[in-house]
Length: 255
Image 1 (spheres, rainbow, N blue to C red):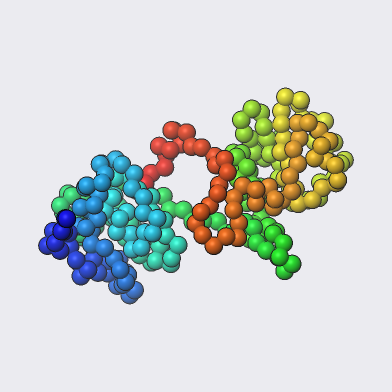
Image 2: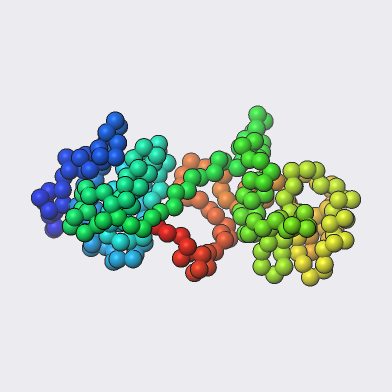
């Protein structure tokens, strides 16, 4: 059995004092002392390792990881992401001297990227049918559908239907308009046989999906729903064929 005494790893009052510095109006209810997280990261990681906290709370884990020169990812759904985590981590980067700063000889440095989840892409209409949310403009919709289908969003300056690109000369075209046979024929005339095209549209003429061997047509939002589970009350997401980051892209993701 291992016993960590508060004299070694801090206690609740230490944690409250550390958190109140970043938000004195709304003190986080259950903060952890930085010394406790420092002990855990000392035992469980090395400098440069990646630390994940999927319930970030007041931001203690990320703050400590930054001071201990670890990379980190913090995830938070609550409003305290804005009221506690963000101001705290900005202060850490600027060199705040609370918590373990002195023991780690922390004087600031580094940085982090702050991302917000996009609005839900698929919602249910009044009849219980899945439809695209009106919070998405056409450009956002194209980018989202392209990414979910494994394409890099990269609109061609000259060819309107080349909105995203994948491997092996494959392209994607996302439209919010009804797709007709005449429109498809116009596109097919400009599509070389060695290239492939995925078209996602809300509706289209019967039989278009088999009209050309190198053109695949899918209905929105089914093309999105087929990539992930939707409408379930759990965290067991079933993401199919997610895009892979290469080493160079991963190096660009700081903390």
